[in-house]
Length: 236
Ligand SMILES: [Zn+2]
Image 1 (cartoon, rainbow, N blue to C red):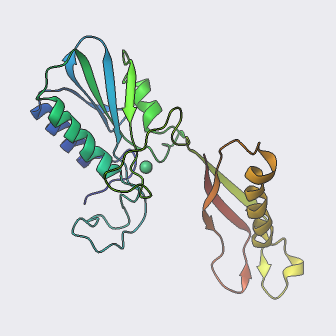
Image 2: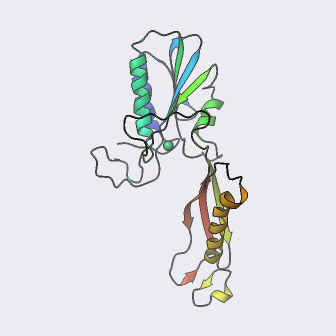
Image 3: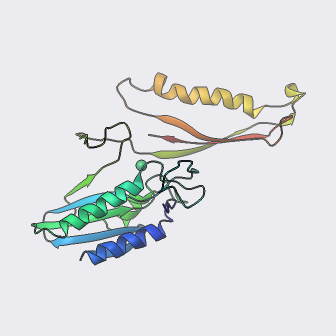
C-alpha cells in the first residue's frame, strides 16, 4: 500500500528491519543504501533468501483495498509480495532449529540503477552482503502461473537488466516546412524499428534477449517540429 521507488525504500526497509529484529535476527540496516541484511542461526552452511523491495513509477488504477497510497508509485511487478513472503519465511524459520545460518537479503532498487548506473544487488554486494554466503534462494511472482503452483528453473530464470538512454538531435522548425528541418521524430521512427531489429536480425536465434523502449519525450506543440527526441529503455 506504501510503495517506494528504488533506493528510497526507507519506510519499507525500516518495517522489515524492525520485524526481523523482533524475530531475533541479527539485523544490519542501510546495506547497499536502503537494503537490509539479517542473519538467523550460526555457522556453516550459510543459505541466503533474497527479496526485492522497490516499486515502479506507475500510477495504480486498480480498485483493490490494498491500492497504492503513494500517487504515481505502484508495486506493479509484485516486490511487495516478495517482501511479505520473505518476512513470512523468516517468521517460520525463527521457530525452527537448523544447522548453519539463514541470511535474509532485502534488496533495494532491483529495477533501476542509481546516479552511477548501479542497482541494488551490486550495491549490497559492495557492502559485503554476500560475504560467506554459500547459496542464494530467490523468486519472482509470475501472473501467468496459476495460484498455488511453483515453477523451478535450472540456470538463469530471469534476464538481468541494463538501462539505456539515447537522444536523436535534429533541427527543429515549423510543421508546415518539414523540408527545412532535420526532423528528429521522423528519424526516431526508424531508430525504433532498428532497435527492434537487434534481437531478430543480429542475435543468435537461441539467445534469449529483449530490447524495449520505455519512454520517448519530444515536442511541445502539434505544429512545431522539435530539435531533439529523448529515448530510454532496457536491455535484458
Ligand atoms: Zn520485479
